[in-house]
Image (tube, rainbow, N blue to C red; front, side):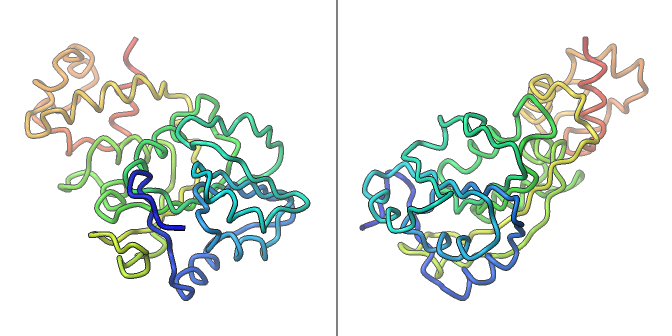
Amino acid sequence: MRPKKSLGQNFIHDENFLHKLNSQIKSGANTSIIEIGPGKGALTKYLLKKKYCRVMLIEKDNGLIKCLEKFKGRNIDIINADALSFDLLGLNIINDAIIVGNLPFNISSQLLVKWTKLKNWPPFYHKMYLMFQRELGERIIAKENSKGYGRISVLCQSRFSIKKLLLAPAGIFYPKPKVDGIVLEFSPIKKYKQINIEKLEIIIRKAFLHRRKKIKSSLKDYIEVLNKNNFDLNKRAENLSVADYCRISTLMK
């Protein structure tokens, strides 16, 4: 199977990297493993050696579905679907679940936002192990007062504790992409579970639209609330913490 550029396919061929990645993924006898974009099954063959109660392989490419048929067996489901439109809640998982994915770089942020904005929180999964383009991954974990800190940093950190697991050099992929990748581990947190995630997204979009402006300009729609609650109006979007943004979202009526 030739990788399809239209689907952003880059297959991992480095067995040493696959072994390292697999060792970072934790599962038990009651774990449901959801692998997004398994491709030819390079990582799948490692995952199936782990403890699990059910494995679901979600692959969009019809041709690759045929490659995955060799894994078909008891408690292993092969699902031909587009992860962007597929509803994971429809899998009716009632036990522990993890999501694993070597995500296509061109849709990785869309998938992450989709799984971050689930209305019921904490979600049905307790871990995600996901691959991103390195530059995007560094922005996801960036902290306030840094250049990389932005909308996706705040959105994700309001929902997860995020850990950098592995760097993925471009050379481990075929075809070789122009950039390196990075694998992050996402663990859902309850700290801000009461926030309205849609409202938070609106606030951070406005704040970072012109990130060099002070919040008295970028968040002028909320100036009364900011003043009343002693926010420093001379700060810029990147100077507010995740806690600050979550607090603002809860103050909005």
